[in-house]
Image 1 (cartoon, helix red, strand yellow):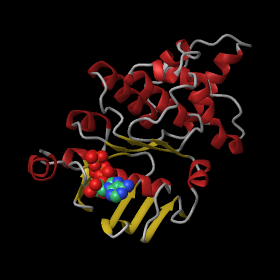
Image 2 (cartoon, helix red, strand yellow):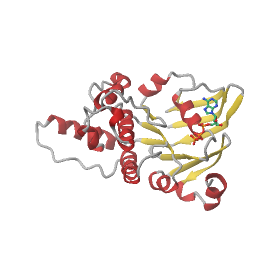
Image 3 (tube, rainbow, N blue to C red):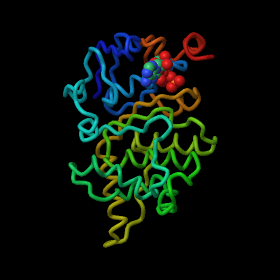
Length: 260
Ligand SMILES: Nc1ncnc2c1ncn2[C@@H]1O[C@H](COP(=O)(O)OP(=O)(O)OP(=O)(O)O)[C@@H](O)[C@H]1O
């Protein structure tokens, strides 16, 4: 689904990404790992077109993305939840979610899809609250909810558990697993003519039909990464140094590339 070949990126004269190659198969959940400052966020921002790359190629479902504008990447169905969440503190939860609608309009999505409230009930309860008044965990749920408004096929998350209390970390993990594996989403009991529930059902069927959202996330917490992801990709000093199925992540790799 996403293929990165020979990617090099510079901040001014500083060479940050070195010949990065990464293959993300559709349906997988890949965790990008590595110590602080190795280039994980830079790689995500390059995929989203938020920073320019020097050379190399980024392909999404066979389409060359390397020079595409960030808005075009969103329209193609790539959702992004940046590090630090970047929600608008003075706008309400509802207004923050509606920001996500801009990129979704081209797909004919005019309203925030109801299944987002099914995934994050707290957002429904807090629709009129200002984003800045939410807890860190609620803001993270809002940031993920906003990225889901465009029904992404690929969801990219940069350290979604950073600075969040443990019970919410676990809830966020469960949501990522549900989105990725499209399992455990129960279709609510539906009464005919109940428009909101019809929308929930449609959203769920859509997610299930598409066999889950492909996920790429940066995560430093090892137990969380092992729980949600089925593949890993480790970076060290701007290069990809190890990759594989999550159950192949060895203690030696952890010691060599991840422990501080
Ligand atoms: N805007 C920038 N201008 C110049 N250098 C930058 C910029 N952003 C990041 N860097 C540098 O690029 C390197 C990679 O940073 P990056 O944020 O991608 O790493 P990271 O692996 O995501 O780290 P962290 O886990 O701390 O977020 C670091 O040396 C960092 O100091």
